[in-house]
Amino acid sequence: MIKKLLILLLVGLQLHASAQVIDNTAAFRNTGRDHFFRFHYDNDYFTKTDEYYSQGIMFEYVAPGLKKFFLSKLLLRPFSTDAGYGVALHIFGYTPGSIRSDEILYGDRPFDSNISFQTFSIQVDAAHRQKISSFFSLGVMGPAALGYDIQYNIHKWTGNVLPHGWQFQIHNDAIINYQVNYEKQLIGSSDYFLLNAAAEARIGTLNDKINAGFNMMTGRFNNRYNPVAPDKRKTEYYFYLQGRTNLVGYDASMQGGVFNKTSPYTIAASDITRAVFQADAGIIVNFKKVYLSYTQSYLTREFTKGHYHRWGGVSAGFAL
Image 1: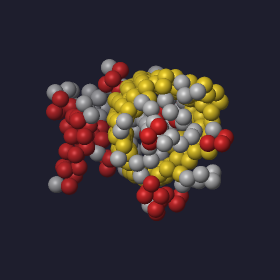
Image 2: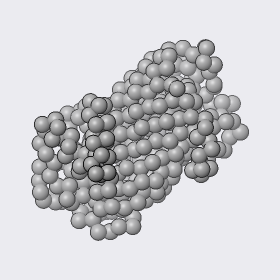
Image 3: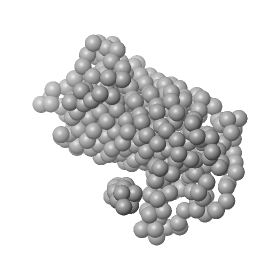
Image 4: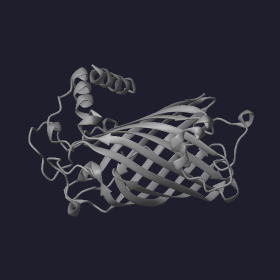
C-alpha cells in the first residue's frame, strides 16, 4: 500500500507539471530571495524525443533556518559572508533509444532511475564578485527508485506505448555524492549584461566528474553579487546561455552502482565518452514573488554508440 501511494504521488506530480542535472544554484537561477520554494521539471518530450535522459524532477526549498539542519554542517563556507541554505528532492530517469523491446539492447544506454535527497549552501563574496555552492546527496538508484512504476503509469494514463525492458535496469545501489560549484564574474555591464566563468566538481557513488565553462545573461536583472533590498528590487526578464565541457570519471547511470555489481547490463568503462559538452539556453522572468523559466539543453555523445541528446525544462517558484 505504501509503495502504491508513493507511485501515485510521484506520477501525479509529474502529470501536474504537464540529468543533465538541474543547475539550481547558477547565477542565472538566482531568485534574489533567501526563503522560497521552486519546482523544476526536465523532459525530452519538449524536444520530441523519448530516450537517454528521459526526465528529471526537483523540488527545492530554501530558508535561513536550514542553517541548523545537521547535514548543513558538511557544506563549504569559505567566505566570511552569510550563506544561504536549501534542501531538494531529485528524481531522474534514463532509458535506451527504444522502450519497446523485451531484450537487452546491447550498445545502447541501460534503463536507470534514481531518487536522492540533497542539502546545499550558497555563499557569495560580493567584494570579489564570486560565488561558491556545495551539495551533499543521499539516495538510491535502481528498482527501489520506482522508475518503471512511474513511467508505466504515466504512459498508461496518457495512452502512450507501455514501456518494455525495465527488467534489465541497473540494480539497487546507494547514492552518496558531494559536489562543489564555483562562479566568478568576468564582465558586468550595469545590470543588463553579465559574463561568468564557472566550474564544478563531483565525487561519489553516482558520478565522478569535473567541468568548466562560461555562462552569460542579458536583459534586465538585479545584481547577482550584491544583496538587494526587497523594496528596491526590480522585475527581471532575461535570456541566459551556458556552455560547459565535462570530464567524466565514472557515471553510475551507465556503468552501474559502485557496491552492487549484479546489474544485467551496463556500459563498459572503455565505451564511456570521457569529454562531453553541454549547452543550455533559456528565458527567465522573476517578478514580485513569482519565478518562471523555460530551458533547452544539448548534450554530446556520452558513450561509444550513442549520439547527441536534447531536452527541455520548465521551472516555477515563489517567495515565502
